[in-house]
Image (cartoon, helix red, strand yellow):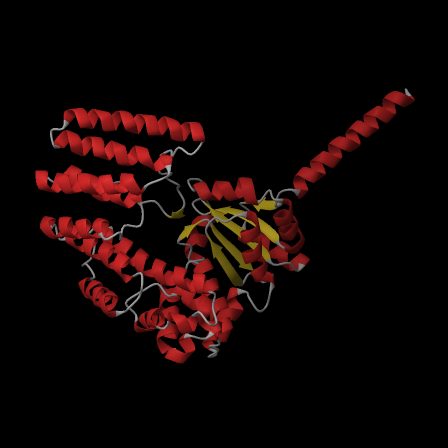
Length: 414
């Protein structure tokens, strides 16, 4: 009997231990409680409050619950420091609180002091360590959003402070305020201040418009900037800012008037800037412009210039250019140019995994030109290259775009 009793005790202890460990590996949430009750608990324990404001349709909310709130370090931090609450913002009291708390996207994470005063906000899904670092700001008097706002309102404007304040605005999804504050700060900087290290993080993360005088000054004085900031970091920021703006214009769907003046500004700047990567960017900018204007003659001419003068960023870019001609033009002259571009891409490309796309496009254009035999040869060569890439483990697989619910509230159908 003693042996049996001891076994039972040990088994129960192990089960209890596993149960307690499982609890420790997840934030201990109060689920859908009355807000008044939460405040009473917080005041009694003298602890701040953490609210996971979620909806049942929000995919990223579920990912946070599954992958982040079950992280031991995250769970330990919240269980030690907060009264944690899960609140469905489309159910019961959550419906009104959504308005009271000005929640516009999901997931939204709110941090209150023990008296129920909002002190910090984080919007969006993150990995465990990143979320933990943003949440720790809520228990740091120097980094919590409410104190940063007070310091800004009091007139503080140092570079290090402004970066911290702008980060808090971005985390809180205050898009309009972030744009205004960053724009006001950056436009007020002198040329000398733009080149100072203390302002680099703000420039790197919040300066997005390549038509600003300040940004264009940095492009023409990047050698001076590179004396205080890593040159690769500088080069990446300058090129990507211009490139992203061009991409934005290339996907302009007409919901508002096109930014013609800004496009002209950037075009003229790149022409006179002396920036070594200006020719590549100019090619992309002009190609997008002529495509948008449906000027087929100029579009074809600029693509021809880009490929022949080695301004295409990759063989993939050339394939995209060729396919745009193959699919939209009904001109043998245009198809012949596309074939020439693909021949150039094929000759230069050494990576087997990129050959199938080139050869497939080549097969299509040869067929359009009436060269049936050569088209079949190119198609067979594409299949062979595809098998070689698969064998080498470098085959490029196309992945369907993933659609994630979350962030802004979905529009209701009529």
